Length: 278
Image (cartoon, rainbow, N blue to C red; front, top):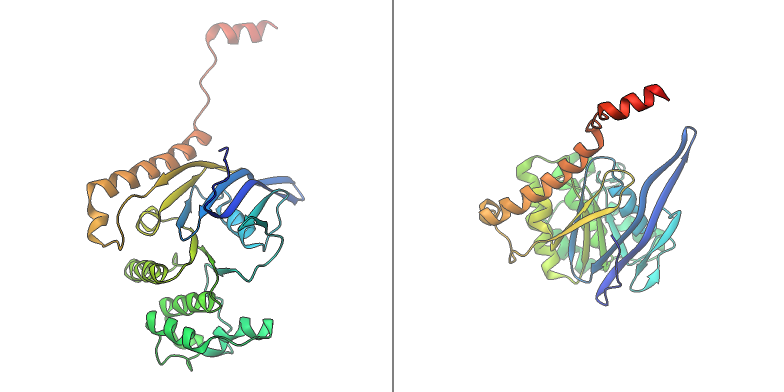
């Protein structure tokens, strides 16, 4: 999709292309992606497996360089890891030999600073981890570990939070609980969020807009506004309007996937005869 710069954009992606060089040949993961993410917006990116969602997110973080194009934060090109950008991964990635408090403090140790203890305590309270600071990761459930990873990512007050399928391994109840928690914390902070997810329901519940990517090489195929008021309730997810939006997005993704595997129509008999005669 072509794009014109949005004056309210926090993140700007322009002509983003990533090619991986492999022994069997070049692999184009994303191709000329254009996207604006506005300040204090939650945007989810969905699409068929292998379409380059995570590649695009990692490019936004500065952890993966692009082959062509650029990503800008507040108008300035991102050329590497940026202190204004926090990230929550698919796994909590807590260091197993450190307790929870030490895990949260670890990024500050690398940077040579100290966490804002009052802010960390507030976040720990908000995610329901009061009193768990001395616990080791093995003593925490999967949901609690992801809550800790969320605290760690927000502890240095990033203006952008990137989330790469962070709740995919959780059971449905815990996942819904985490979605509500993310929305609540987001409503209390000036943070801009970009979320990669395979769950269309999660994308619609959390997002202001849902971006659908095409099959590889990934491009932005469409963008769907989510007009439902906040805070969102579980009840709103049962309404006809939400169901219709989720169905539209799902059919678009499935349709894109089918288009790749659909058999090509047979040539008309006359064309086949012409080829045989040549």
